[in-house]
Length: 111
Image (tube, rainbow, N blue to C red; front, top):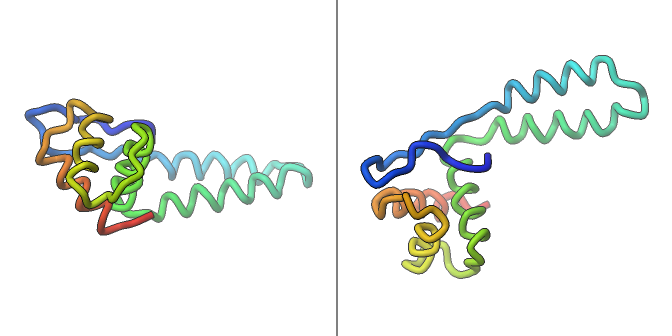
């Protein structure tokens, strides 16, 4: 998930788009026709996609927050005010309310 859509100063929600089921189905199809050399890699890919698909939306948003914090070089305490500031630096269109909510989810679901 490269980004989250729906962010602006008037919207305090984050829309999560998931397509892991489509990717998993494509990998399973490829695995069905795979050569013996390709099978181990495809089996590992299927397992990774399925584990990601099993993650809740809150867990995915928490991971997104941590990735956005890392993108701006933030290495401090995720529960700090500095983390909210860094998150809003990474995503300038994110409202303060949305940033705080996302921060709370990241704190509650450490990755």
